[in-house]
Image 1 (cartoon, rainbow, N blue to C red):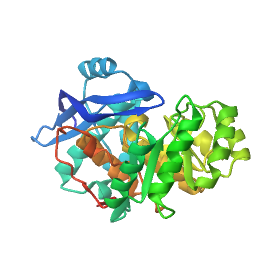
Image 2 (cartoon, one colour):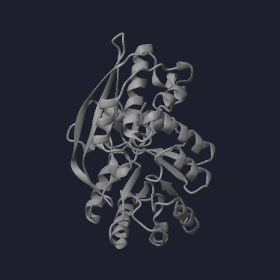
Image 3 (tube, one colour):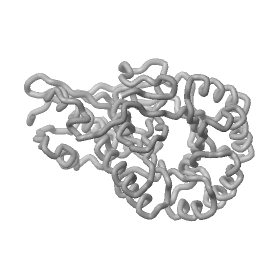
Length: 341
């Protein structure tokens, strides 16, 4: 596999209802479907969905890089991970593009060799994974009803977006969530880095009696995470702070977070995610794989990463129901809060 033909097509996904977070509303996602064709006619596809608001390159930067790309690739299948890293070494500053290229290459190799991805990457996968549902900024009454609906559909983990201008509103919402969910449902909160150190400590102390599974991105700096951990019994998860192996390694080795949230689209693909998962598990930090609201094509990559995680924890992959129409069929539909592999 040396000479490859690259084509791409843009896509736009519209959410049925915008998700409001402390960073603003998410109402649409745009990206590119990358197609690679080999000399013998086999093809592979991948998803590159930039999300500059959350740390990736811009849509325009991705397209410009695609137009300039020249492909002459020689991959070593005996050490595919290392070979992919070397091949895509010039795109570390373009994580969404790197994700799409890596996925397309892996998909092409699977089709060329007629081999499953787990075999190519030597992965041991679970046969099912749990997923969490997400609720954005809604009123207490709307949130209560939404939690009731989601738990009736089989979700046993709910993530609530918090970080409103007045924490009292967040607290009211979370009390409504716990009232609706009862004690058997896991509840995690996502601050999206909205709080400063003082607010994070003060607010989390007020949430300790609500049985919060973990607080995601309560602040931004690793130093703040370390200080917050000293002051609260609630486990902490790093998300926006994790955008490559180096930042993940710092959080893991300094014990700054109990959970590392991995978004393959924002860290450059499946292989970087697998490297972080392995480092985290070696150091008793739990990895959680989460969607960046990419297409069904890109979400397939996330499922493989999540299924490789050893811990029985819910991953953030339940986003397909948000779209008016996706660009492809979902290969891994969610049934009763689970995905079967």
